[in-house]
Amino acid sequence: MLSKFWNNFMKKSLKERFLLFIGMLFFLCYFILGCMIMFVKSIPLNIPQKWRYVLGIVLIIYSFIRFLRLMKSNNDE
Image 1 (cartoon, rainbow, N blue to C red):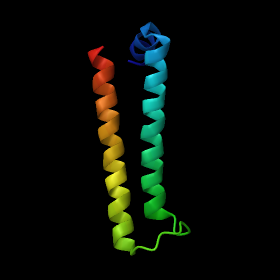
Image 2 (spheres, rainbow, N blue to C red):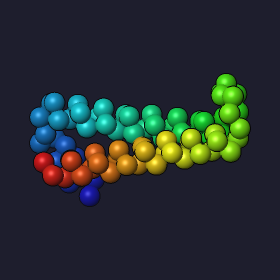
Image 3 (cartoon, rainbow, N blue to C red):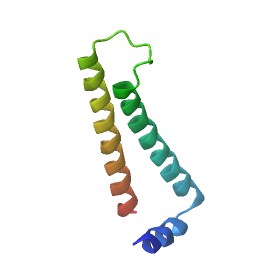
Image 4 (spheres, rainbow, N blue to C red):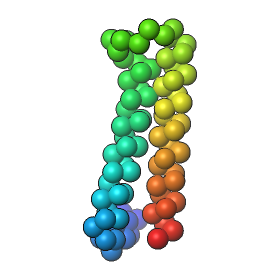
């Protein structure tokens, strides 16, 4: 499975590989930001804890939507 992904990755042009890398980077950024908003208390947000969880969950869901769209576009090419 991993070798199939690697071979498919190496067949892409440099531009396509760069865009895949940037897409994965933004997936990780949104996911980590959502987790940080939910669990790190020292982030200076003046909102109640309930809304911190809501915002964190929305960011995590958005990151997974971006990831699924990235994988779908990766398979279509």
